[in-house]
Length: 238
Ligand SMILES: [Zn+2]
Image (tube, rainbow, N blue to C red; front, side):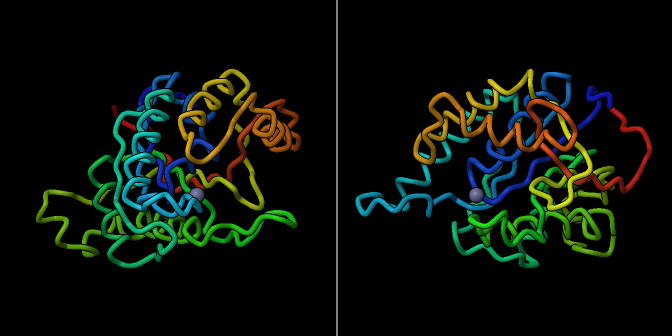
């Protein structure tokens, strides 16, 4: 896929979700000429069990961490919607906000999580915010972003309907597409290292292990996997 005219909108619940899930893919795509913008829906204020940490302090720490990570991966805009971490629901209000951003950024590709993922393996329950973010993202792509009568108030803001060409769903139970991130793996680690309040990356061995596991099915040494929905096939315009 020629990435030069691609516009990527990455939508996740928390600061650090993009780096864990799709950090290698986004670094590869921006290196190949795509534009990528990130939407982080919650404020990240529940990302600490330290009794001495306040929610307010954590919000600014995590926003700064996310900005640093975005710079490493060549991400253009970073939008925080400011919903309360740990309380996210796929409301109409959230769907409208994501629809507004899709119509404004006009992505050819939206990247988001899998709304059907309740758990992974035998020891990881998926965060409820991740599911809610994925539901809202998919419902914003279709039907909201491309359908004129939905959210008519957005037309008053000059935001015309927009068709997203592809959705790349990460964390899917049945992936069908693998991105080789071997060349961009160190960049993924460097971006993750900005999330100091959340993760001790160290030498990245556990991240490398995940990428190796992910790549096994496709015989790729280090990969990130996706289920890809191809909604429309016209060539993207620049
Ligand atoms: Zn998360």
